[in-house]
Length: 359
Image (cartoon, rainbow, N blue to C red):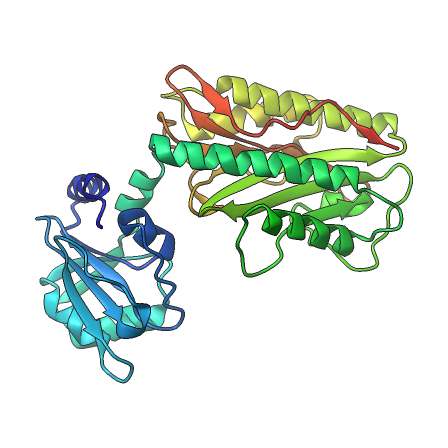
């Protein structure tokens, strides 16, 4: 059934933003509102929310999307035009479209009406989704526990006989055995200089050598809520330079975690981590933002970046993951997920962060 409390919150945010009608088409957002997965693929599936509480759902018969209490249902079959169904229920003026909806859907609706104005309409949902209720926090805690186990599994299986891709696939299989469901392999396993590429994908044939950093950035959806964490360890030995870089990143990450509390700007959380790294002389090598929101998607608002002036509020979940990336040399990143509490934050991921040399 439609989650009436969440719907009420969305309508409140719509009114604050002056949006009289929005089309919700993002799968995680529909699940957040209804508890149901749609996965329309190339077809059209959307929920129209109006600021007076009038709600309509537009679904293909193939979706097997049962009626919802308090929602006017509109079903269509392949070969029929769903966009006219939607257009007929819109009132003239601005319409908020989902930021992730394929342009073919938006354009098809605009062709049906010449008296509507497209606007970005995801913000009311994004704002509400960023405040996790207790059931969501518990789902994130559970996912984080699996993530801790996956990192431990990866570190325990470091071997000069395994290339990056093989170890990455082993970790992916571990996730799937513990409840993860995803369409593509995502696990980042980076040896040596590859760790200096913030989004390096595991490569077949990339082998491990003594003194290499091994960076694990592991993330997966567990029961529709994502986990995400990064740990960097070293194989057999660690140079003094690499040890220094590691300790700076660790200090920056802890400083940012300690700074998190309700009322602080997300940009200031980023600034705290960035200052530690800059003061140590490595500012130009901090190539990424400090963090991003995590929930039913792995990247969602709010983000801890220089450009984000959103304020941390109780229930928000996001990553803290500063890094130093020295091209063709070494990369170090340490990442944990936190949930903002009344007086600080709860760190979800627990795997130790003291520098580790794996023999």
